[in-house]
Length: 126
Image (tube, rainbow, N blue to C red; front, top):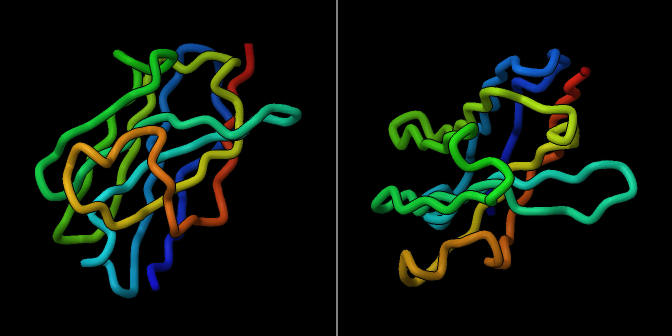
């Protein structure tokens, strides 16, 4: 089992920045693929970014490319999502997720993740 706890959400104005963190505990060695997902009210959950922690391979949703950066501090077992140039469309509950994959090519936005955090709210006002 892997436990995930997100932090860092909040309210910002358009163009602002936020840094989300996800602290992992438990059998973290079994989760080599991690990602951030978001869900806005009335909308389906969507993938934001993923990272293969064994080699750093990353994927981003087109809507956040160039604005968001996903990274992993392996020593601290912390996943980070740096969000810059935020827009009202980025308003959502953001979730951290993790899973074990056999190859880095199986770590992407459509991967079925096994472990999920409780989420942290991000609100961007115009």
